[in-house]
Image (cartoon, rainbow, N blue to C red; front, side, top):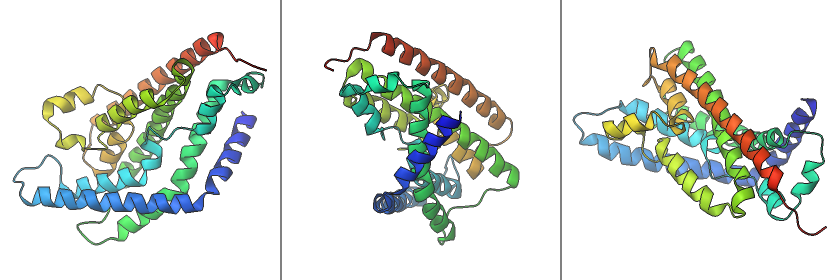
Length: 266
């Protein structure tokens, strides 16, 4: 375990060096946040009945932008991809660690570092904005605690899915096709493009059976107060079940890939 933690620290320190890219990311997320809010302002100004309160919707927007570096699927680790495609994976196979969990740590450190340097400026600025653009605070400490638990589980879930996308490179060589299909589908079904409460009711019911909404939609709506009561612990249990499923699936795919991997040259 110590070697995994040491590697995590090294990767975080490496990612933090790219401060210019981090500030560019902050500016981009702020821009898209304001654009979305202005669209929803226009939409709500003529709406008689709404499925989610406007303050909750704005809170959802800012949390999506602040936690974008965590919930995004299409941000792959190029070191891992290059390792597979150029044959350097052979060096990894002789090292004394579990390759699946090492990749899991790599992706975690990448997302963790980007979260640390990008998310807090967005959250702080959004909290101090004037209405109707400001980020609301959680209704209670218990709500905030449930949000943290759900967000942690959502982070583990998205990392387990992204790890599988990396593993699929063994079978496809080029990740663009798989990445575009999975990421586009996942981001739409997770409510990142259109908030799930604004979708048709029949479509919402179908989305609730899929894992993607448990990455961002669930924790963000818990924070905003849109999801309360018995639905919260039940949803958290479903998050844990999906995490178990994807980690087991990832380990299975990794073992299957490594039994058939062929490295040419030498």
